[in-house]
Image (cartoon, rainbow, N blue to C red; front, top):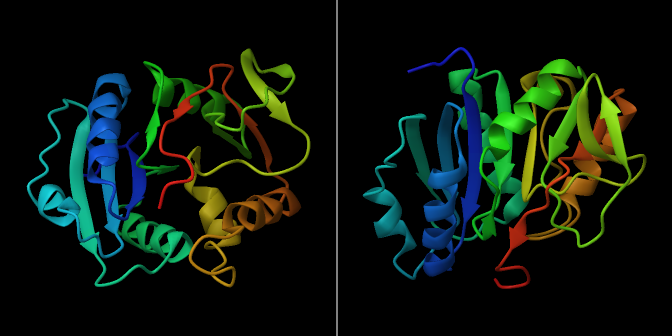
Length: 209
């Protein structure tokens, strides 16, 4: 099913089943806008694959769930790119990268979309950095404005036009590198701006592999 205002939510998993389950429990409670789940598993061996294969998200907003299973750990950048390739099949207008070890506030996706819909060439996300940034009002929407640096892909939301414009994540940094910094550096070069919602998120599995 292709929803006119559906967001392709792309997540990469690699083991850490309990964290993934905790994230999904929170995600389904807090997401109140049509979404399509695209999950890339990087060769998990802890039961994550079996759990994902039977996953049937109980949410009226879920427009479908597409899972892809790699035989080995391909790294975050390749996993993100595989998610983008799958999203290209559906052509949902909004794209979202998300990690499997985060918690978000209620209504987060609706708020992100309200920002990017009223501010063209702007990518927004949830702040997990531990530092707050100055608030700025853009067409009636408040954001933590980032005049430099990158947007963390633990949760980022942007229009498909950004992906169409700059392509995919760079893969030269290894399994876990600076692919997000490169992606949003190129976004800036293409004339896009970035920022976070005023409300920060919780990154409960940071640093665990």
